[in-house]
Amino acid sequence: MTAVIVKYASFGFHRTLSTTKQFVRLTKFVKSALHNKLSVAFLMLDVAKAFDRVWRNGLIFKPIKFNFCRGMTFLIKKFITNRTFYVSIVKDFSEKKHIRRAGVPEGSNLGPILCFFYLEDFPKVPITYGSGTRN
Image 1 (tube, rainbow, N blue to C red):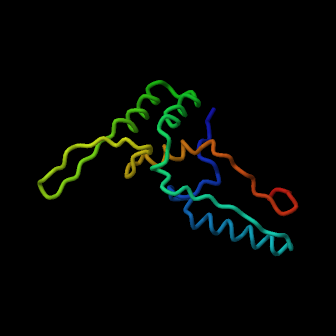
Image 2 (image 1 turned 60 degrees about the vertical axis):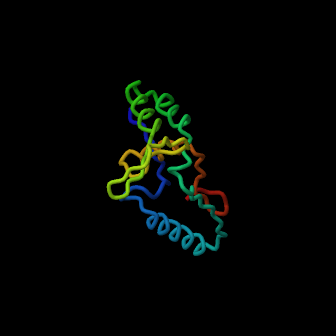
Image 3 (image 1 turned 90 degrees about the vertical axis):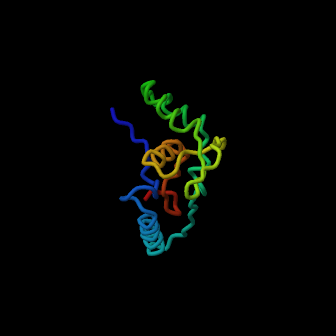
């Protein structure tokens, strides 16, 4: 059995689902509703700094929830915890510091996947017309 982790309405972070496509989808929906003389109201959620706001302990729980093997859970935990950084200017390096805040590493291939994985169970509201019937 294959689990679908990324919801169909998630846009951003991957090539085939750009935010432009979300805008086109919304425009078509509004145009259709107005053509049918229906009222239109919508709410869009943009999670600002999503990478920085992922609760690490909650993310570590997700693989357990989805029955991932222990090795995968361990790998995710190691990837997002005990992170350090330093600053380099030419040949001078600062002292290594620990990153103590929430979040997942940016600039990696795994970062966006973990961010989507964390938001997987965010409540999803179906697209409806003003009468309450689904699109």
